[in-house]
Image 1: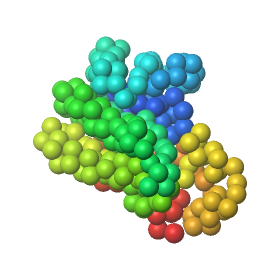
Image 2 (image 1 turned 90 degrees about the horizontal axis):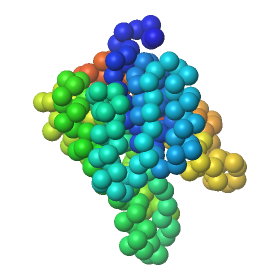
Image 3 (image 1 turned 180 degrees about the vertical axis):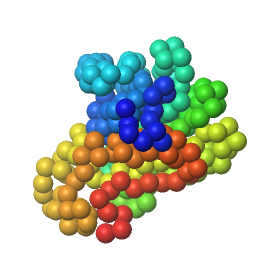
Length: 255
């Protein structure tokens, strides 16, 4: 139980897409540690089960649902499963995402659609599906996961950067639309975090060294270091905070 009641999530229910690994797992564990019940929605059922065991060990209710965010029916089923399991939905964390790209002139429509649909369209669809339940609970929280590429361009990951830039504008627009429903919508912009997605860079090499030299903290972050921002944006402590983008990046954005 958190010492400060502002950060106490006891009695709330959260849905975390892509919550079975990396940043999603880090935030899910943070929410559970603050008392929230957690539904993990991701495709890999073995990884889902492993994270559910970790979450339950923290003394909260946790479940998992197989979910492909490219399938609207799957999204709607994940929202329904959360409400069925916990009786409510108060917190939505839109973490599921993919990277990729290449030189702009060589990007195919298939690659563009897969990345943009996963990272942007699905975020909107998850928000839309969750909205009536977030509103009904009287204290809805949406946390979208952007990226440093929400802020910076890149010659190598154009569709990823475009989709994550769109997440910022989606966040701001939903924040203004849903404030009347007592729903706060914010985004976290992770810096370079050690995950499966960044493993090739985090292991070393010129790009790794360039990133670390630019980052005032002098290192890559760990997924668990997103938990504090997640708990803050999910809790009463952020009830007057909406439409913001919060970098959790060791200072990379200002380095």
